[in-house]
Length: 405
Image (cartoon, rainbow, N blue to C red):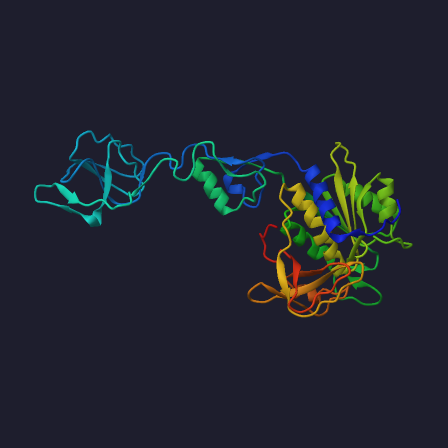
């Protein structure tokens, strides 16, 4: 396999997403309390009318016919009242209780009075104070489609319907391999060696994009055999293996030969984006016939994160059964240069309104200071530049644990 012509950035994202969609797992059944952050594998439908029975919205009286009314009982939430069969009868009723059959109105306690003879008088309000069956949903109605991100509100809807479990997409499993004999895993850099910054941070990005994190291995020795052994071992348990470094074709860059040895197929081999060049995404045959994926991230830290947001985030969205969301639109706070025939992803911070993006400093490929001060990337398309005030795309980073793109 040889280096290909760089793929347009938007096309690369679409190819990664489509590959993930095609390889998405089926469904697994999990308890409601464990479903937060997962994706519905099938539509959520109402198991019964909601509400399932006429329900009082107030504390007061369920009455039949004109006033005055003779109290004949009480109904509380959770009870099943007998019907009101005679005009002039009423029952005391609590909020959330089932309205008895035969009731013609509800009267709020504050709108009622009880006479010396025990009879109740009052005036029902113009808008009925009860919820009717099916007011929120009818039995069998689709409430949420497959592909919906499960959050606490979705869990609440499912519980209201009577669900105890949900059918959800499996969580993709990820592993990370760090390549490079020059890397230190502890202490400050020096004497020709640099501290590995990707091994500690990439797992957190992967979790925030919806993967469950497995092994982190490295630095892997700069030999082809060591690369092959590490990739094969990671692929035994992971749906996605991310590697850092080795994406070029230098004397110690063994990733491309390793992929050839494994019979991998490139989905994307280099992307027309700056920073971030070169990166790759490949499909690797799995022992069970189900494909695995390998994402090659450059060794330069900022370029590696751009590769992650370009290829890995869309792939994981597809594997999780999610949609690939459109880029939000923001206003450029200052001029942002283009990068010729390449898309420019410019690290930028948003203002308090979230509507204006201004580039930050310290944005070299090997730098991370700019990343730490940014909310995401301003997107400047090939052959263009952005002037202050222009509307441009913005690729946000998942900066809060639990955010799910």
